[in-house]
Image (cartoon, rainbow, N blue to C red):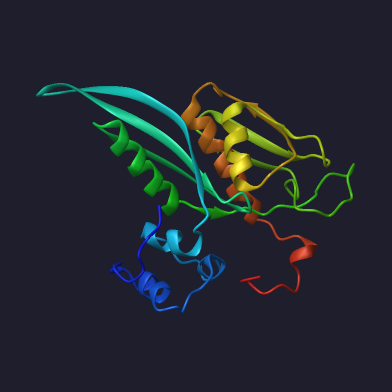
Length: 211
């Protein structure tokens, strides 16, 4: 979804800095650990995002007024080049739930560190993860293991969607727990990709924060 910069009225200081051209790259936002609170910021700085619906279910809950049914949507977004987001939302209308989930995914977008961490491969291309990394959500824990070039995504269908949107082309995965729970499985994969930025490798020495 494109955004008209002229018509957009930011509600945060970060939003104004983006609109005024003081911030021109999303890397600058992560370098200063700023929190993205407006989806328009992502629309402007990452205009080529793709989105995929991972799961849609009808959920119900009992209230004093009776049983209320709503749709719960899980949506993943990414540019296929090192950025991915995961969003979850509920609404009475399916379309509204998906739109809200897309917005939530944009607010949760994170950079993904890629590399060639497999000892079987020395291509030095950013096609896999740079090291073994794990993510957890509920009872589900997913471990991403670097794979050599050409292996592909050895993972479940939900994980493949998120990894592909993040720009990961080759990886082995290992999961434990109730991985059939789609929402927790998706969160665990997302958290694993998010955790790639918690470590500093020798390749990062000497780099500036926004590079």
